[in-house]
Image 1 (cartoon, rainbow, N blue to C red):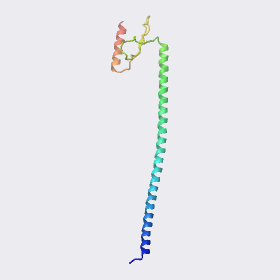
Image 2: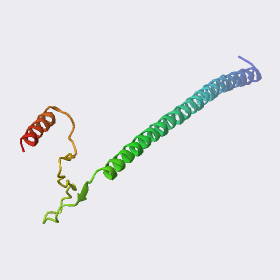
Image 3: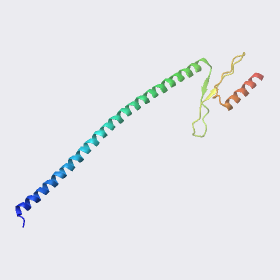
Image 4: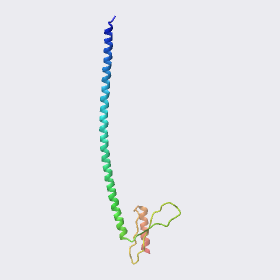
Length: 139
């Protein structure tokens, strides 16, 4: 028969070894969590920098679009100032749908030019321009 003190010491040693093993596992898990946190913080910083670059590019794009719009507006204002266009809104109709403004071009006499707004030069628009040009030659 074993000595009861030796049995208790053996049990105590096993408990202590189990505690040490458990603390080792907890420490390894803690290290893993810390590493994952560092990785996550690194990814967050990279994402933040990437978002800053995207925002910067978007601001540049907005600036370019604004400059283009300002240029086109100035060209349109200059053309409207140089040519006798009169913009009139169409008469109010019973429908509530909004309608585009109509460009009224006064007739010029004495061999002057007939200015008009031109559509884009797709095939149908080109044919329309050619028909209009032929009609104006014969009138």
